[in-house]
Amino acid sequence: MSQSTRPSKPANRSSFIERTLVDINGTLEQSLFADQIARQKGFLQTLDPRLKVISTVLLLIAVNLSHSLLILVMLYFLGLGLAAISSVPLGFFIKRVWVFIPFFTGLVALPALFMTPGAALAHLPFGMIVTQTGLMTALFLILRVGTSVSFSVLLVLTTAWNNVLKALAILGVPDVITLILGITYRYIHLLLHLADELFLVRKSRILKRVTGSEERRLLAATSGTLLGKSLQISSEVYLSMQSRGFRYYPRTMDTFRMKMCDWISGAAVLMITGFGIWLGR
Image (cartoon, rainbow, N blue to C red; front, side, top):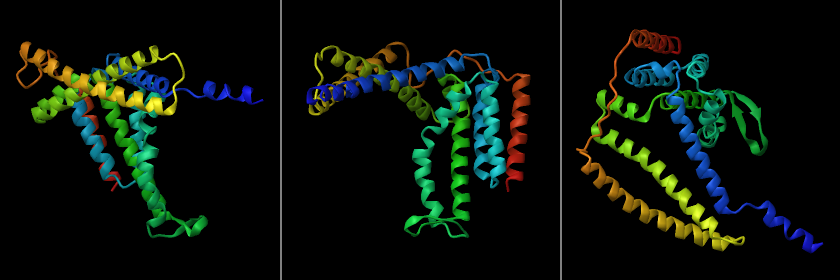
């Protein structure tokens, strides 16, 4: 009986290297899928990137200045509607927005349920009381964060990253900030590719199932190799940028032109922002 139970444990237990490869490949696939969405023919993809950046900021202001749950819900469904007419899969969009909010915003909103003074709504064990004011506070926080993240994700999904950076530069964001954002975005992809290759090489040279201590040693060795490669590649990339004419600010060949649909969309966003702030007072 002992011989039959021993092989079942390693068979059901995936190694750390395999799980890491799956996670890295999943992240790269999501990033590639997001780039494909920005190239599709949808409503938001046809608008001027400058207008989309300004509209996103205005909608974020309306979300954070509104004191009505109904207005926040309506603004959130506005984001869902824009995603639907912009060829963004709703399942992918909702998952991308809400998968991390319960872990971060929920941890911040949870104490408000019990620590905010107000009428008792529910009595829990250990003497904890959920107040009506605390529940409203937690709902406001979660809805504000979810709606704000939805509009921000919608901007990134429907706009090429280079166009987002160029729009930020045109609107007055300092060059050093846009340069740091651009390099950071590129290096995240580069480091993911390097990590994927390193873990794949490690897996191809391992002929037996490793123990936990051996996995930790492999992880430490791979992290050190990844750090060394990233430093080497960063210097090589900078030298190649300088040899190709880089002078402290990236240039793109895309030109932005405001069309009639851009002006109409901008006027609609101004009206929505004004009504959202006024009705949500």
